[in-house]
Image (cartoon, rainbow, N blue to C red; front, side):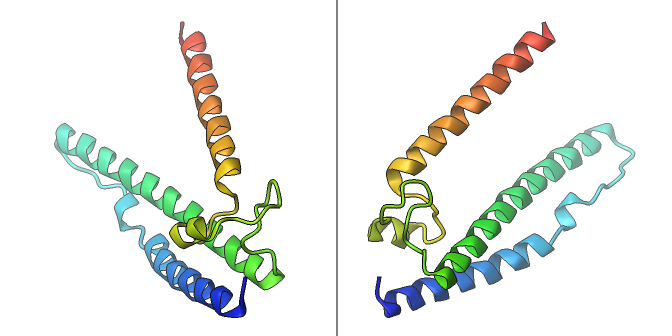
Length: 128
């Protein structure tokens, strides 16, 4: 990868990092609000849960962006962390913070989906 391409990705990642830091710092949505109406309490709880999930997702994305910036500094950007093959330029253009090539990402997603399925099965067994 050329120096110009690396600089382009670094600029993109730094802009994304700044955007995510601003989002993660805004935690107004997770404040607990008391209400005399039970339906309002339920609504506030649902909104709080959504805000927490969004915050969690954006925090994970921020960690991925920071890791990608570290890989640029270390000279390992655009190399899959699992198989050590080059990540395709199209994939990097779409998801510049990705640590994996398409094949390894699909494998990781399948493993993660399998873990969720196992956890759900365990939960059903323990509930019975």
